Length: 378
Image 1 (spheres, rainbow, N blue to C red):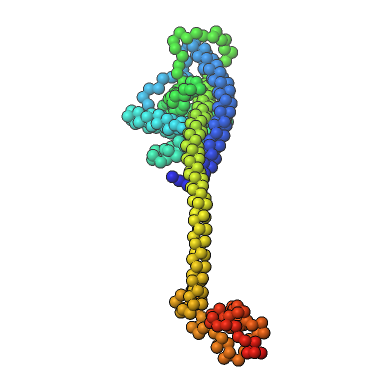
Image 2 (cartoon, rainbow, N blue to C red):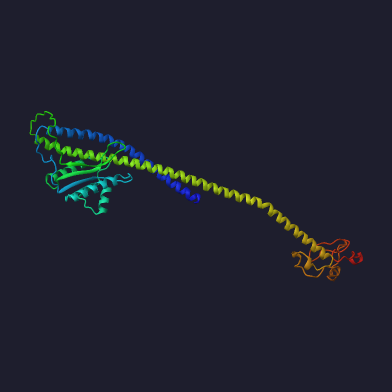
């Protein structure tokens, strides 16, 4: 089992990651709602523009360069819309997978594909795969600017009118509902002509219809491209919200497991500490008893040695260890006399110079001789 400190470090790391993912989930939820409002407004405008073009062109045969059915395609423009940031699940992977399918189908038709890449993630993937990207941009974020969208649309229209490309398609995620955002291939150029017998609005033209279509059709292309970009950004935020929600749930599960492990490791350490304390407390009486026994043995040895010494035995063999360092000469009265020292008037033999112990007044405890007469003491 890991140490509590290591588990605590992992818990702190996962907690920080969970805060990050939960914050990103909330931000993605807010941005997806805002993008849905803008997307719905652009959708209404694009649908109204397409309906107006159908009504205008439904009254007769329209011969306009932007309206028609693509014939033999030799060169095609493929606009791929990806995101600039990651952490959005399989959003970019699905779009790029669909783009690869489109490119392979064009290669099977022996048509050259001009890739227009939107988003940093798609550009990095295509460069890594070795594919040629004719145009790329990272200026389109959650709120694409109308000027940038118009510049891209005009670039495609000019290439189509110059016959540099025969058709233009857009590979992007389409918003169908909050739970369903499929990746679809949407034709952008040429604009599909209205069906035969389409209802005519009964408009009276003060100018030629061609001049009016020259103004309306490019605007319809720009509006359709803006709508696709807004739908893609909305799908990106929804995918990011789902991915961050899953990451937050996984972090909660991991925190639950690691907290349980931490509690078990902490309880084990507390149990071991308690066992150490209890074992030490139980060892104290035995240590005290051993010390008391040693003291008793020492006292017994001292007394045994003194008795053997007093009775005239060899104190080196019977005395305790601390007495064995003294010389073997016994302290007797003759020794005291030979030292030319007079005994005290009290009748005691005095203090022994070797062991500093005072003997009884009636007799010397070592020599067992009677108390010396007072005349000698004098």
